[in-house]
Length: 264
Image (cartoon, rainbow, N blue to C red; front, top):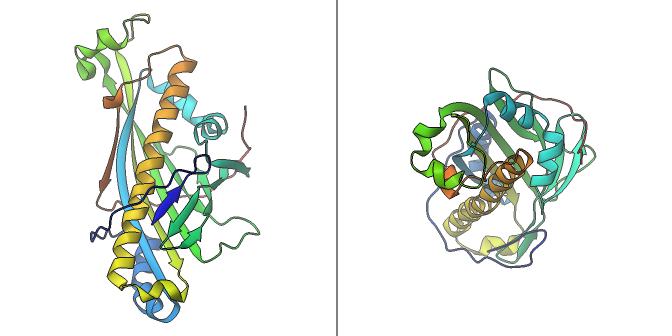
């Protein structure tokens, strides 16, 4: 089982894990109930995982919110090396990479919508790609972000002087952008894959999904922090200023939107 990014042809061989996550959102919960029968009849498997994390931003709430609202700029810049195409006013089509699973190759393409914030919460989720039929797989993705205002001195403590040693004295406010992510992938495998034990197929697929999210999400987080802080001539937060963890499921209820495209 291997993963290759769109820009690097390095292969990552993953160990087998027997742990299974349950994705707790209404769409995926229904799909889990359906798959017990469908798996046997149509060779379909569901792989799923839930995650959480945060990233620190060294400015006030309005500055961070204005930056996130202008996603047509940072989303396109920071999603690289994934290929990004605009979709409507608030959406994007992503070519995620190339996956090799026991000799079965998949190159997923998904469309996501970033909804305008409601009550300070930013939601993103998958939508169908117009005129595109995914060959043997389906991806369901839901995430949300929320801004938390923190006391910079109280949060960073003695690290403040070290982090800002080459920069102007910071304000006493920072924002922690907390996020959660639920993701599931259904795959219809060819018959040669089904010669393997069902438990091996399931556990290895769940492990692959988690490992791919673990590779892509921290990279995206760091690039957003780098893009934001460079723009405002601020130091990039250290590794402790961002977090990624695999978690138990979290419910999300998304809304649809439109898109204007990617700005330079």
